[in-house]
Structures are given as C-alpha cells and as structure tokens.
Length: 334
Picture 1 (tube, rainbow, N blue to C red):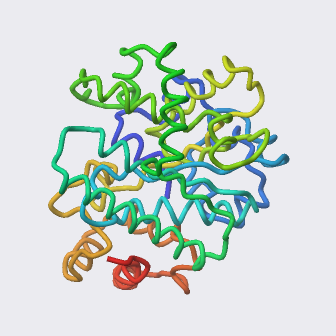
Picture 2 (cartoon, rainbow, N blue to C red):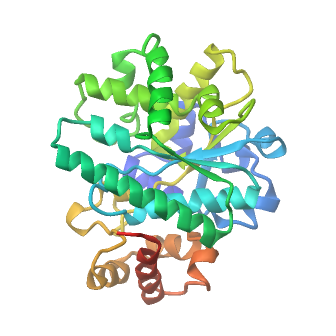
C-alpha cells in the first residue's frame, strides 16, 4: 500500500509536490532509524509520509513526543479517528521510550462559538471521558509516561493564555485565517471572527518548547510532534516562533503522518460523511457495514496500523477489524 496515493486523491497533488512547496523531507530523507521503522508500523512508510526536517537528533537525544486528536466532531462521543490518534501517540512513545504529551483541546471547543451552559457542560463531560480513555490506553499499551494536557484545566488554560497573548503580538490575522487551509484542494471559506484568531494562537502556543516546559515540569524540552499532514504549517510556524524566543535547537519538528482515512478512501476521516462517521459507541451494524465497504487500501491501513497491544492478534479481514472496533468502547466510561 502506498499512502501517497491517498494524498494525491485528497489534495490533488503528490506528497513530493507538497514537499517542494513547503520545504519538507520525504520518508527516506527524514532519517527515522531502521530499528524503529522496521519494528513499528506507525513509524514506517505504512503510516509516515515524511518530516519537517532531518529527525536524527530527535531520536538520538532526549525529546518529547507531542500531538493530539482533533475533537471538534466529538461533542457527544469519542470518535474512532481520535481513538486511533491517541493510541498511536502512546504506542510511538513506548517504542521510542519517550515522554508523551497529548493535547486535549476542550477549552478551544468551548471558545469556538457562543453556546449554552448545557452545551459547555457536555464539552467538559466529553473531556472527562477522553481523559479517562487516555488513562486506559496507557495501561493497555503499557506506557505510563504520558501527560494529558487538557486545555480547560485552570493551570493549563492560564499558561495557554499567557503564551498565546505573546504570540498575538507577532502573529497576524491573515496568518491565523490561513493556518489550516494551505492544503485544501477547493479552498475553505475564510474564518474572520476574533475567536478564530484567539483559538489559533492558543493552538500555536502548544508548539512552543517553553510552554511545554512550564506545563509538564521539564527542562530544555525538545519537541518531536507526531501529527498528520494538516498540522504542517502549525508546526513550522511554531518552530519559527520558538527561534524568535531564543529556542534554537528544540523544535518543534514533525513526523508527518497520513490523516486517518475516511472509510470510503475518498477523503480523510474528518471530511467523511458525518451521518456515517464512526464513534466508539456507534451501532454494531454500522461498524460492520463500514468495514465491509472499505476499499482494499483503507482496509489495509487499518489492519496494519492499530497497536498490537490493543488488537491482541494480527487482524486479517474486515470482519475481524469490525470486531476489534467494537472492543474499543470498553476503554470509555460513558
């Protein structure tokens, strides 16, 4: 399976062309050591497209694995996509024997638009579930060195506000409006509200090494981001801002992964039909139907990349994949 074929379908350009545009490294040039890429599919060409820079020093020296799921579609339930992202981060941390920081953007969803108190309570409740899910994943995968950086926690929110406020002095509205639109094949409508600017500078604060040092209680943090192609500009801008703040060799650098595929293979999951988008508590019939309808390359992606600590055995077909997906709700406390 060549994951670059997904990129060509979704973005109407090859990853090689994207590398030229955004000055990225392909998989071979990223220098992920063979001892990791051959041992763990999540660090191999079945999951990784490339990197923002040569990663050799990040593997040789102490570094922190950072990333987080996109949860804007998870107001009522944990999405299968975000479960995969969380499991992937923890598994990579285990393989590399590094600390993992998982960002959980609850406060950003509360700030995104005006909403009722009941709606805000639901975001907090889903945050509680995500936090417990991460704890269960840590135990199941066997890597305890994981910190959930939940943005609605008072002490974390205060630090995000502090660093985001500093970024707003040097980050323009135009930069904020286009931060996540650089890869859109058709172009999304430009967001113009002030909340969008505030939220994006909050997101960027998470990529500053000195922010991570404050919230995680570590010194001289060197950040290795494990996130998908959609986050490339955020990581590159975060790196530029870190340099401006006199952090010259601390990243963030990014291991660029393929976004989790929608089950029809025609788009990333975050653009997949909302009515059929899978969650941990989706009906058994829907999960079974989605798995049976998967194109070969989407099925292969899922069979290969979920951590074996969760699957318990090699997954070989759509029926086994569907049964595995149904077990994941056991990690969630509704």
